[in-house]
Image (cartoon, rainbow, N blue to C red):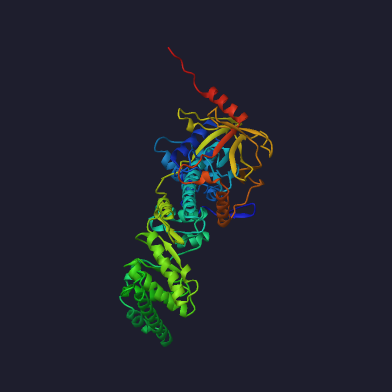
Length: 558
């Protein structure tokens, strides 16, 4: 049964496998140790954050929050799950039965979750999520939260990067289901690619679950399955006489247009020459146009793009035009995409002028074929006429980087700040419960994110504040913010608590696109982007280093 909070129905996670058992065994062993020591109810605060932006960039898109909230809203260990935990833990030693009775009553009614809004642009070290509650319960949430946020944020960021390189005017289509890491990877990738700025997906299940627009045409197999246009007429014999006549008339009209195009091209001296085209391809295009006259988009590279695919497409499209329909476009799935798209555009423009077909020169050209950031960038440099890109493997598998690397660290227990030290300074945690703010400059761009202690006064517009690097004493700067935005909001609270509603996917997508559009261009560029500054207040800086010195053992030289 779905949980209800703030009047909002919170069904369980999209993937039914996301249960309280989707965690690491040591979460249960620690829970038992806490329980046995009487510490399990102690109030703890954990921060979930990442240490480095992915893909060599300087920004990340936060995603996965909705799934986390749905998870805790429905968090409850079933009897069979507790039996399995008992069986698994009894392999090493027999645990007290009272622990399993405790597990049967565990829920998230005493947990609070504060987070940055999903779809926001975020940066290293700044907490994406802060989870407060009984330490044993919160530790049981660690692995699922990391699992739900790591991949989601990585894919959304990857999609946003592809969106940025392709350009705002281009349509991006996610075609990655067949290459994704299993069904759950495919569903999640479609959702978070859409969030990151893609326009549509080929994934029908994702379209149904999330309301993502669907796009798709036909494959090379469809084209090569036909033999000749005569096959269309022969196969129409089982239809009524009216439909048989329609098929025959349309086939004849396509043939007439193909002859006109060939005769016209032969009379030109500009290199445009259409000889005999592939008949099976022409039959396939004709058949598809009969099935989808309002959405005829042809895959034109099964045999030869320029000698067969383009003239066959034009013949079918012009026949449709005579009947009052407009072709949707072509798809290129191989070859030199910059050259082929440019040549196709030239032909479309010439046909518009020669045969008086308004708008034919603007026929949509879609390109696919294992595209990634690098190929999109190369196409831009070469010059191309592609209107839409179908991207699969590289965006859904995050081929360029396998994981984001979010971590979940204890920063406070029983109101006592805690710190995790390391010889690698990047792995030192920032202690205590914190508040996070984004400071904006005169031009409207974000300048710096700053973390402060929970009880510190917030930064104020027009008042100078010292921003310090958390670990490098020489890196510091004064900032006079023109706008201040507090980043974290409450998304889960116990009974009676006020929390933010979860926005629909479309709103999250719009937030992502809006925030990316407000970033300074040098932070966004693909190569050598300028690092975005993440800082702490002077007071928090002093406290971090006081606690660091207090917790670090002092060596002795002999």
